[in-house]
Image (tube, rainbow, N blue to C red):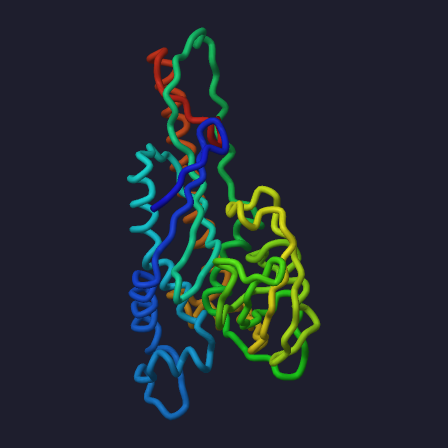
Length: 306
Protein backbone atom coordinates (compact mmCIF):
# COMPACT_ATOMS: atom_id res chain seq x y z
CA UNK A 1 0.00 0.00 0.00
CA UNK A 2 1.30 3.44 -0.92
CA UNK A 3 0.09 7.04 -0.93
CA UNK A 4 0.73 9.89 -3.35
CA UNK A 5 0.72 13.60 -2.43
CA UNK A 6 1.01 16.45 -4.93
CA UNK A 7 3.61 18.95 -3.71
CA UNK A 8 4.10 21.09 -6.84
CA UNK A 9 2.65 21.61 -10.31
CA UNK A 10 4.28 18.45 -11.63
CA UNK A 11 5.98 17.01 -8.56
CA UNK A 12 4.57 14.41 -6.17
CA UNK A 13 5.62 12.71 -2.97
CA UNK A 14 5.17 8.96 -2.70
CA UNK A 15 5.02 7.23 0.68
CA UNK A 16 5.53 3.47 0.63
CA UNK A 17 7.06 0.67 2.67
CA UNK A 18 8.68 -2.75 2.66
CA UNK A 19 7.33 -5.21 5.21
CA UNK A 20 9.48 -7.08 7.72
CA UNK A 21 9.45 -10.32 5.72
CA UNK A 22 10.70 -8.64 2.55
CA UNK A 23 13.28 -6.63 4.48
CA UNK A 24 14.53 -9.87 6.03
CA UNK A 25 15.17 -11.15 2.49
CA UNK A 26 17.21 -8.00 1.89
CA UNK A 27 19.17 -8.51 5.10
CA UNK A 28 20.02 -12.07 4.10
CA UNK A 29 21.12 -10.82 0.68
CA UNK A 30 23.32 -8.18 2.33
CA UNK A 31 24.80 -10.75 4.73
CA UNK A 32 25.69 -13.14 1.90
CA UNK A 33 27.16 -10.28 -0.11
CA UNK A 34 29.34 -8.89 2.68
CA UNK A 35 30.21 -11.83 4.95
CA UNK A 36 33.35 -12.66 2.98
CA UNK A 37 34.90 -9.30 3.81
CA UNK A 38 34.10 -9.30 7.53
CA UNK A 39 36.60 -10.65 10.05
CA UNK A 40 35.24 -12.20 13.24
CA UNK A 41 37.66 -13.76 15.72
CA UNK A 42 37.15 -17.51 15.98
CA UNK A 43 35.59 -17.87 12.51
CA UNK A 44 37.11 -18.36 9.10
CA UNK A 45 36.48 -15.44 6.76
CA UNK A 46 32.97 -15.63 5.36
CA UNK A 47 31.83 -18.28 7.86
CA UNK A 48 30.67 -16.14 10.78
CA UNK A 49 26.87 -16.37 11.36
CA UNK A 50 24.87 -13.24 10.72
CA UNK A 51 23.80 -12.89 14.37
CA UNK A 52 27.42 -13.00 15.52
CA UNK A 53 28.39 -10.26 13.08
CA UNK A 54 25.37 -8.14 14.10
CA UNK A 55 26.21 -8.59 17.77
CA UNK A 56 29.74 -7.24 17.21
CA UNK A 57 29.13 -4.53 14.62
CA UNK A 58 25.43 -3.71 15.08
CA UNK A 59 22.41 -4.69 13.00
CA UNK A 60 22.95 -1.61 10.85
CA UNK A 61 26.01 -3.16 9.20
CA UNK A 62 23.69 -4.93 6.72
CA UNK A 63 21.07 -2.19 6.31
CA UNK A 64 22.63 -0.31 3.37
CA UNK A 65 22.79 -3.20 0.92
CA UNK A 66 19.51 -4.64 2.23
CA UNK A 67 17.70 -1.39 1.45
CA UNK A 68 19.33 -1.15 -1.97
CA UNK A 69 18.13 -4.70 -2.65
CA UNK A 70 14.46 -4.23 -1.72
CA UNK A 71 13.96 -0.59 -2.70
CA UNK A 72 13.68 -0.84 -6.53
CA UNK A 73 10.74 -3.27 -6.55
CA UNK A 74 8.94 -1.37 -3.79
CA UNK A 75 9.38 1.96 -5.59
CA UNK A 76 8.23 0.56 -8.95
CA UNK A 77 5.18 -0.98 -7.28
CA UNK A 78 4.27 2.39 -5.72
CA UNK A 79 4.66 4.17 -9.07
CA UNK A 80 2.48 1.56 -10.79
CA UNK A 81 -0.15 1.60 -8.04
CA UNK A 82 -0.55 5.37 -8.34
CA UNK A 83 -0.41 5.29 -12.18
CA UNK A 84 2.34 7.90 -12.38
CA UNK A 85 4.14 8.97 -15.55
CA UNK A 86 7.53 9.65 -13.94
CA UNK A 87 10.14 11.72 -15.78
CA UNK A 88 12.93 12.08 -13.22
CA UNK A 89 15.09 10.09 -10.88
CA UNK A 90 13.40 9.83 -7.45
CA UNK A 91 14.73 11.67 -4.42
CA UNK A 92 14.30 8.89 -1.88
CA UNK A 93 14.47 9.14 1.91
CA UNK A 94 14.34 6.30 4.41
CA UNK A 95 11.97 7.54 7.13
CA UNK A 96 12.17 4.54 9.46
CA UNK A 97 13.95 1.18 9.71
CA UNK A 98 12.96 -1.66 12.01
CA UNK A 99 13.95 -5.26 11.33
CA UNK A 100 10.70 -6.40 12.96
CA UNK A 101 8.41 -3.92 11.19
CA UNK A 102 10.15 -3.21 7.89
CA UNK A 103 11.28 -0.01 6.18
CA UNK A 104 9.31 3.13 5.34
CA UNK A 105 10.27 5.36 2.41
CA UNK A 106 9.30 8.61 0.78
CA UNK A 107 10.15 9.48 -2.82
CA UNK A 108 9.77 12.86 -4.52
CA UNK A 109 9.53 12.66 -8.31
CA UNK A 110 8.55 14.82 -11.26
CA UNK A 111 5.67 13.69 -13.46
CA UNK A 112 4.33 14.89 -16.81
CA UNK A 113 1.08 16.85 -16.52
CA UNK A 114 -1.26 17.29 -19.48
CA UNK A 115 -1.71 20.93 -20.52
CA UNK A 116 -3.07 22.96 -23.39
CA UNK A 117 -0.53 25.41 -24.80
CA UNK A 118 -1.53 28.69 -26.41
CA UNK A 119 0.50 31.63 -27.64
CA UNK A 120 3.48 29.35 -27.80
CA UNK A 121 5.25 30.93 -30.77
CA UNK A 122 8.35 32.85 -29.83
CA UNK A 123 9.03 30.78 -26.71
CA UNK A 124 12.72 30.25 -26.02
CA UNK A 125 14.62 27.53 -24.23
CA UNK A 126 17.59 28.23 -21.97
CA UNK A 127 20.04 25.36 -21.99
CA UNK A 128 20.77 23.89 -18.59
CA UNK A 129 24.18 24.61 -17.11
CA UNK A 130 25.51 21.06 -16.72
CA UNK A 131 28.20 20.88 -14.06
CA UNK A 132 28.92 19.06 -10.81
CA UNK A 133 29.41 21.11 -7.66
CA UNK A 134 31.85 20.31 -4.88
CA UNK A 135 28.86 19.76 -2.59
CA UNK A 136 27.40 17.12 -4.92
CA UNK A 137 30.72 15.30 -5.10
CA UNK A 138 31.11 15.38 -1.31
CA UNK A 139 27.56 14.03 -0.90
CA UNK A 140 28.42 11.00 -3.05
CA UNK A 141 31.62 10.37 -1.10
CA UNK A 142 29.67 10.67 2.14
CA UNK A 143 27.40 7.85 0.96
CA UNK A 144 30.46 5.63 0.58
CA UNK A 145 31.61 6.51 4.08
CA UNK A 146 28.14 5.74 5.45
CA UNK A 147 28.10 2.39 3.67
CA UNK A 148 31.45 1.41 5.15
CA UNK A 149 31.02 2.89 8.63
CA UNK A 150 31.59 0.69 11.68
CA UNK A 151 29.17 0.76 14.61
CA UNK A 152 31.09 1.11 17.87
CA UNK A 153 29.54 0.61 21.32
CA UNK A 154 30.28 3.37 23.84
CA UNK A 155 30.90 2.44 27.50
CA UNK A 156 32.64 5.46 28.97
CA UNK A 157 30.38 8.44 28.23
CA UNK A 158 26.74 9.50 27.92
CA UNK A 159 24.76 9.98 24.72
CA UNK A 160 25.85 12.76 22.37
CA UNK A 161 24.27 14.27 19.30
CA UNK A 162 24.85 11.91 16.36
CA UNK A 163 25.04 8.78 18.51
CA UNK A 164 22.79 5.75 18.10
CA UNK A 165 20.80 4.87 21.21
CA UNK A 166 19.33 1.37 21.48
CA UNK A 167 16.14 1.80 23.51
CA UNK A 168 12.86 0.32 24.67
CA UNK A 169 10.04 2.86 24.89
CA UNK A 170 6.36 3.09 25.66
CA UNK A 171 4.19 6.19 25.36
CA UNK A 172 1.42 7.28 27.72
CA UNK A 173 -1.24 9.98 27.51
CA UNK A 174 -2.94 10.77 30.82
CA UNK A 175 -1.16 7.70 32.26
CA UNK A 176 -2.77 5.41 29.66
CA UNK A 177 -0.62 3.62 27.09
CA UNK A 178 -1.66 4.45 23.53
CA UNK A 179 -1.60 2.24 20.44
CA UNK A 180 1.55 2.38 18.34
CA UNK A 181 3.59 4.07 21.07
CA UNK A 182 5.71 1.08 22.09
CA UNK A 183 8.95 -0.34 20.75
CA UNK A 184 11.80 -2.63 21.83
CA UNK A 185 15.49 -2.68 20.89
CA UNK A 186 14.98 0.33 18.64
CA UNK A 187 18.14 1.95 17.27
CA UNK A 188 17.50 5.70 17.30
CA UNK A 189 20.03 8.03 15.70
CA UNK A 190 20.15 11.21 17.75
CA UNK A 191 19.57 14.21 15.50
CA UNK A 192 17.81 12.24 12.76
CA UNK A 193 14.40 13.66 13.82
CA UNK A 194 12.91 10.19 13.49
CA UNK A 195 10.78 10.79 16.59
CA UNK A 196 8.47 13.74 17.24
CA UNK A 197 9.14 17.02 18.98
CA UNK A 198 12.33 17.06 21.07
CA UNK A 199 12.31 13.37 22.00
CA UNK A 200 15.84 12.71 20.76
CA UNK A 201 17.39 15.77 22.41
CA UNK A 202 16.14 14.60 25.81
CA UNK A 203 18.26 11.44 25.56
CA UNK A 204 21.48 13.47 25.28
CA UNK A 205 23.53 13.29 28.47
CA UNK A 206 22.09 9.98 29.63
CA UNK A 207 23.93 6.67 29.82
CA UNK A 208 23.33 3.05 28.95
CA UNK A 209 21.15 1.19 31.48
CA UNK A 210 19.34 4.37 32.52
CA UNK A 211 15.54 4.59 32.60
CA UNK A 212 14.11 8.06 31.94
CA UNK A 213 10.84 9.84 31.16
CA UNK A 214 10.71 11.80 27.91
CA UNK A 215 8.03 14.48 27.65
CA UNK A 216 6.76 15.50 24.21
CA UNK A 217 3.72 17.01 22.54
CA UNK A 218 2.27 15.54 19.35
CA UNK A 219 1.79 18.02 16.48
CA UNK A 220 -1.73 19.29 15.84
CA UNK A 221 -1.60 17.85 12.32
CA UNK A 222 -0.29 14.44 13.42
CA UNK A 223 -1.63 11.57 11.34
CA UNK A 224 -3.37 9.82 14.27
CA UNK A 225 -6.19 12.01 15.50
CA UNK A 226 -6.43 10.25 18.88
CA UNK A 227 -3.03 11.64 19.90
CA UNK A 228 -2.73 14.77 17.71
CA UNK A 229 -1.99 17.90 19.74
CA UNK A 230 -1.73 16.01 23.03
CA UNK A 231 1.15 15.91 25.52
CA UNK A 232 2.65 12.47 26.14
CA UNK A 233 5.22 10.83 28.37
CA UNK A 234 7.48 8.08 27.03
CA UNK A 235 9.04 5.65 29.46
CA UNK A 236 12.45 4.95 27.97
CA UNK A 237 15.01 2.29 28.86
CA UNK A 238 18.46 2.89 27.34
CA UNK A 239 20.18 -0.40 26.58
CA UNK A 240 23.28 0.77 24.72
CA UNK A 241 24.99 3.81 23.27
CA UNK A 242 26.76 3.48 19.91
CA UNK A 243 28.31 5.71 17.29
CA UNK A 244 29.37 5.43 13.67
CA UNK A 245 33.10 5.35 12.98
CA UNK A 246 33.62 6.58 9.43
CA UNK A 247 36.61 5.49 7.36
CA UNK A 248 39.03 8.18 6.23
CA UNK A 249 38.68 9.18 2.58
CA UNK A 250 42.09 8.37 1.14
CA UNK A 251 43.80 6.16 -1.45
CA UNK A 252 43.76 3.15 0.87
CA UNK A 253 39.99 3.42 1.37
CA UNK A 254 39.46 3.64 -2.40
CA UNK A 255 41.67 0.60 -3.02
CA UNK A 256 39.76 -1.43 -0.43
CA UNK A 257 36.27 -0.55 -1.65
CA UNK A 258 36.54 0.16 -5.40
CA UNK A 259 38.47 -0.89 -8.49
CA UNK A 260 40.41 2.40 -8.47
CA UNK A 261 43.88 3.06 -7.08
CA UNK A 262 43.64 6.68 -5.92
CA UNK A 263 41.03 8.92 -4.38
CA UNK A 264 41.42 11.39 -7.25
CA UNK A 265 40.70 8.67 -9.82
CA UNK A 266 37.58 7.73 -7.92
CA UNK A 267 36.47 11.36 -7.66
CA UNK A 268 36.88 11.70 -11.42
CA UNK A 269 34.70 8.63 -11.92
CA UNK A 270 31.96 10.03 -9.69
CA UNK A 271 32.03 13.41 -11.44
CA UNK A 272 31.82 11.67 -14.81
CA UNK A 273 28.75 9.67 -13.77
CA UNK A 274 27.02 12.73 -12.32
CA UNK A 275 27.74 14.74 -15.46
CA UNK A 276 26.34 11.96 -17.65
CA UNK A 277 23.20 11.82 -15.53
CA UNK A 278 22.72 15.59 -15.62
CA UNK A 279 23.37 15.72 -19.35
CA UNK A 280 20.72 13.07 -19.96
CA UNK A 281 18.21 14.99 -17.85
CA UNK A 282 19.07 18.29 -19.58
CA UNK A 283 18.67 16.72 -23.03
CA UNK A 284 15.33 15.26 -22.02
CA UNK A 285 14.17 18.69 -20.85
CA UNK A 286 15.35 20.26 -24.11
CA UNK A 287 13.51 17.64 -26.17
CA UNK A 288 10.38 18.23 -24.13
CA UNK A 289 10.49 21.95 -24.84
CA UNK A 290 11.10 21.28 -28.53
CA UNK A 291 7.96 19.16 -28.61
CA UNK A 292 5.97 22.00 -27.04
CA UNK A 293 7.22 24.46 -29.62
CA UNK A 294 6.33 22.13 -32.50
CA UNK A 295 2.92 20.73 -31.52
CA UNK A 296 1.09 23.54 -29.63
CA UNK A 297 -0.62 20.84 -27.55
CA UNK A 298 1.84 18.83 -25.56
CA UNK A 299 3.14 18.02 -22.12
CA UNK A 300 5.18 20.46 -20.11
CA UNK A 301 7.94 19.42 -17.79
CA UNK A 302 8.83 22.11 -15.24
CA UNK A 303 12.22 20.76 -14.32
CA UNK A 304 15.89 21.60 -14.14
CA UNK A 305 17.09 23.75 -16.98
CA UNK A 306 13.64 24.66 -18.38
